[in-house]
View 1: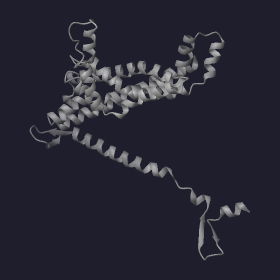
View 2: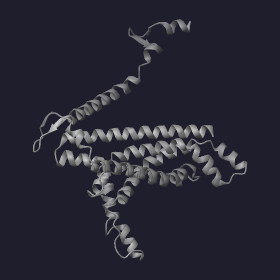
View 3: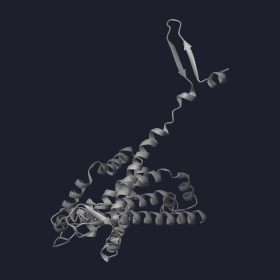
View 4: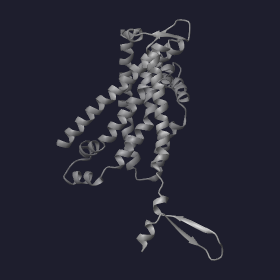
Amino acid sequence: MEDLVHRKHDAVTSREDGQRLVRCPTAMTRQRPFFVQFLVPAVLVAVIFAAAMFNVLKYSFLEFVPGSLNVGGFTLENFTRINRPIYYWVLLDTFILSFATAFFALLLSYPISFALVRAERNWVRSVLVVLAITPLFTGEIVRTYSWMLVLGSDGVVNTALKSLGIIDRSVPIMYTRVGVVIALVQFAMPVMIILLATAISQINRDCEKAAANLGATPNTVFWWVTIPLTLPGILSGFVVVFAWTMSAFSTPQLIGGGKVLMISNVVYLQGFSSFNLPFAAVLSLVALVAALGSLALMKLLTARLEQNMATS
């Protein structure tokens, strides 16, 4: 009997004390396609992004008119101009800085993530969470200027080293690749910590206990059981930080001081200093292709590494 009622489109009930009819929708009509609410904004964002990329692609084939914001007709000169050593060196620096940032962020974030998940006291976990997440609530420009005060010639680092008698003169950290990497690592660590903590929390502790019962030392358990089980989180964190650093602008612009250039800084110089928008568009496309190519390569290496670990 209940099946017959549910098959009807609507069930109508009446009340004796009034002439009001209440229409009760069935289970079929109550189910709304909730995914549409998420699909529509995603489609709009995708359309806007595609339109912006099409506009960048269109500008890359237009001629630059010196002294004017207007562009000329169709040309391929912008693509031939990029075949210069200076732009190759900028791409190489971008790759090196991005890789170094992801590597050192991983080394510094893993112990914090491990302690965050395995800490027995709740207050220790709370403190670690606050220390890890707080940098996300400050702007990138504010953090960059803070690092300029720390890494400057008379900054915190050089002042502390001088007071300890380790150095006599200030060590040049600002306007160097080392200073840029230090600032970028601090920016990337909160994201890396979150990804690694998620991976560590998913480990089955029975695997570690089984290895310990078989005579493995704590160091052996950590390197041969814990690390391999968290490899997906390690790889995902490395790829995310690497791709994020590829588009860094304000940090190399301020910390590097024009001496350390990444691809985004060159795009800014061409587009807003020289007003060469067509060539800036070409550099943007090159940066996008380079980022996608590096991510594809990392995905291939990740797949092979996971396959080797599965067979070993």
